Picture (tube, rainbow, N blue to C red):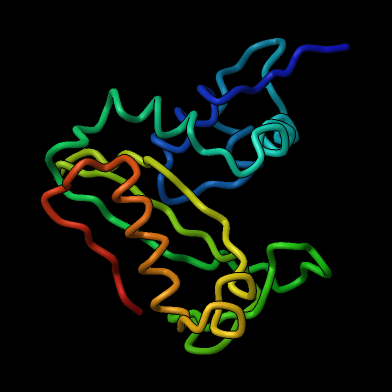
Length: 167
């Protein structure tokens, strides 16, 4: 059995270095030139191994971000996946960029900033059907606010502000 070519530290370094453009092919492109460098599938295999557990990202980023001061930013985005067939996390949701409902993944990212550096601290891929009004009575906004509140209480230790952009 071959050892994995990509681990949580490679992924964290990639997220910190390229916070706006991240894809498997971009992760492969920015790897150092080496004989045994990871392919784009190495990142995918790592994410499948780690599942929904983002504790590795939280633990590693705590060394770069001051969790007692600074600003915490929560960004809910829906990376568009218009051609994804029956992929589990893909669903319809309204997306401000397109001003209509699109097929995408409900991704909630928490990051810390001191004004210069933007350090990702946590992420969640969530299923809106699971937390939406049919089962819980919450609106989409209320459900997202509860997720953000739980994340802030869990590990952010009283940030100065918690910001969430609106569409």
